[in-house]
Length: 111
Image (cartoon, rainbow, N blue to C red; front, side, top):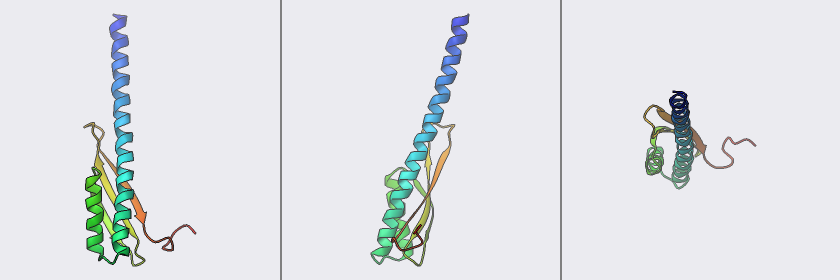
């Protein structure tokens, strides 16, 4: 009987660990997709594309990285701020969201 109890505890810990790992992986995928999408959108803006086209470029990159573009805002300084969502592989984990900003170095950076 004690063996069954120990197996139950081990199983519960394993399932919990897998859910945590799934959430962490989704978070990392979301941040990577957001960073790449922001860079693509900012590059399109710097290349002369209008804001809607730049956000479309960002959305395409997000999709190629397993994410969905949730919002995109292009600034007058050729910068882009956007957010993406990634659905975790484990059903009970939910959706990970990440934000990113990209643009020329002189546009509102830290220094």
